[in-house]
Image (cartoon, rainbow, N blue to C red; front, side, top):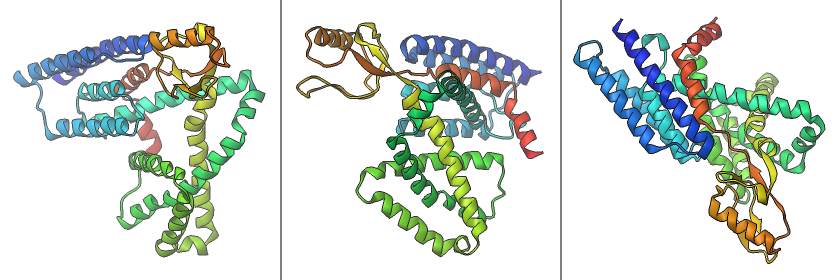
Length: 344
């Protein structure tokens, strides 16, 4: 009874904080620090009350869960995948999820996976709508020299390093399961993102490919002898690239549009570098627009110092609502049922 009451109180607090953070994220693309601090304070009060009256014992699992949550949030912040507000909100939601044996996994990982299930569904729905309403434009945008080059470069990197995880699993005698695959996938994405930056260095792709093939010849020679191993490796590499291209590479295509300068609003993000007629840089790519630089852009356009009347702007998907949806899925034990289905 005590745990059920604790769960209800923390879930109610999460819903309130999730709604408030979603409103500010949608309107201003920011999550207030005061909201995060208020949530931490309220959560501490609830935990202290239950500990004081003997209805809760904070085991090492509780603190280990917070360490995992901090590692995920801080790691994604360093990789520039999450802004500071999203990282802090994830840490708060993880703190407000009490540990339970029914999870079969730490709540922070549980929450993280559910958040990206929600995000994946939103992105997939957006892509499907683009293909449904403008199929020719969508296909034309996807099949370009840039996208083909991106696909080729990604394949070289994926094929060169992805096999290392399978090799380590085999050598360490680890039982492969759904959760392990998920954790390895997250680690792989981090390594992939770091290595992919090396493509800007001359011959980096060639070095990665030669190194990968050489290590495979030394450590996993059967792939060169048995065609089945090579086919399986190619299959998983191509599958990963397709998924990555759809959910990452296509964001510049489907999440970007041109907006007239006169209709710009604050918190829009510039999707390309902007220059005046003399070649001077006005705004860098990924700059978040403010009232001040919008006013300056309008003045420059009025004075005819630029050749454009519209600028490319990237639509920003507020992440706080996805975190709220992920928290709801977590509290309803969605992944427990999903995990049981996978194991069957």
